[in-house]
Image 1 (cartoon, rainbow, N blue to C red):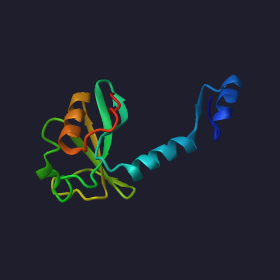
Image 2: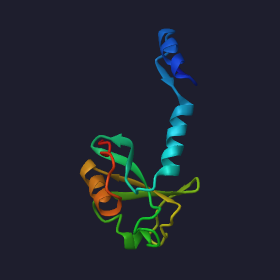
Image 3: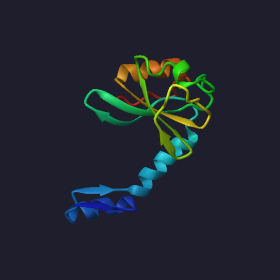
Image 4: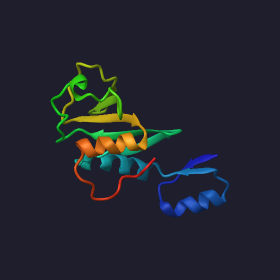
Length: 133
């Protein structure tokens, strides 16, 4: 059984009552929103994993990628691959002629080392170590 809890104190109570999974939706959504709004370092943030392949997002704001087309940026030629671009709540497939803007959030796929190479090339130096997948 999956249930939602809006307070941390309810998690244990719901688990003791028999819930298999307790989701704190407000906390999860709040964290995701804050990451989107405050992410100005360009670093990748792991959002999923399939075997050894990681799925990550990275804000393009303030990066050298802004103003380039997907083709010129070269994010589909080996290394971390650009899977999609999200802008202002809309996600679309990155065709070669699409221009990366300050509002672009790049959805990337690759191994941990490929995403680390992306960070080394495009992101600000880390303040904290990036989560590994």
